Image 1 (cartoon, rainbow, N blue to C red):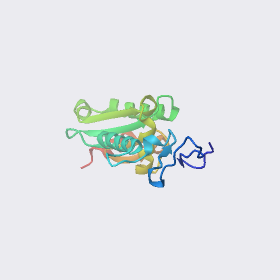
Image 2 (image 1 turned 180 degrees about the horizontal axis):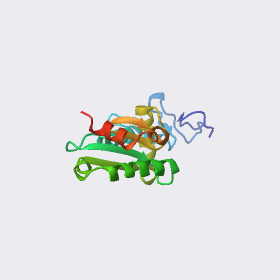
Image 3 (image 1 turned 135 degrees about the horizontal axis):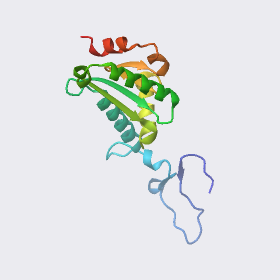
Length: 164
């Protein structure tokens, strides 16, 4: 059988033992890879579910929690730039007073350790125009990557977080 597109008509040459189907009852066959992405009236496709899930994860991570200030880093465990950014944020948190630390939440999502890490990274690219990691947010504001965070001193991070 020759394959010409994702959707092919299933037809066999007519012989004395095969019956002819009408054109309206000809069944469509899909490639196995296309099936999860085929749309039906029953709900969203698998791709749409993955995308929606990634969006919900990112939005939940960035949403304010209990009035706390937050720093969110989308990272990969093996990335040296991510390690540098995490070390800078860790140094910043150590410089804070206990009352300021109580008001702060640092969330790090290691994308390479998650099944949906690629989908999250794709969604972050549409949201921030940045596909690389680390992808850093301070107080719901997108900062950028490690090189964008590097010029931030502890005072500048504190000002970005605790400014009214």
